[in-house]
Length: 184
Image (cartoon, rainbow, N blue to C red; front, top):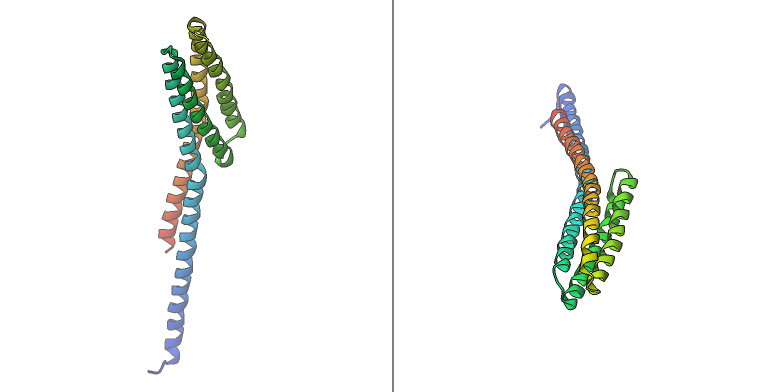
């Protein structure tokens, strides 16, 4: 089959347009992939870590409530060991938040410092319970409850920021998708 001179230009035009469309598709898919990877790497990872910190905090609060209602020394020691494990998990999660959080580091510092200070209050309460000084421990427990409420507010601030950042990334992905569809 022979090409005529007037068929070569349209044929080359179709090949050129198909090639451009292919490269455009690849570029747009890579762009969507980058947005999705960034969304996972930063806001979703930090949001999940913050939610886990919140969960570990609730576990600690629950175990502290049990400590306040028990008088068995061995139970207090066992619960304290479990609290230390939850505390360590939360500390590790804070390190991940420091690494991946896209907001102001000062917000993480406030929350982390409050979390670490809470450890000191808990230790004092546990020591009082071990000494069977439950009246004084109950007074400290009220102080700790107010402190935990403030800590929860600081954790929520981090979680809300990360969640909002994830929404922004999701909106960017939707916009990129629409642009890709229009261009292709």
